[in-house]
Image (cartoon, rainbow, N blue to C red):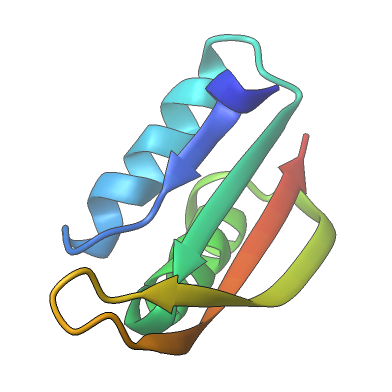
Length: 90
């Protein structure tokens, strides 16, 4: 299951859409998109572009949202970072 996970970072949206498409074409029935912080909007965009433009048979199975405590190594302070997991199934 964990090998069918796409982690969202700072690359363009289409990179993640193609990563998801590749996983589905290689036989995966489910793909999970994970993102934190400012990358959440990219994750949502990736899922929607995949569903609407490339693969209409893909559906959103589940969406999990969470808040994670992240500790800054330099200052030692911790801050809250939002995270999202979007589970897609074919």
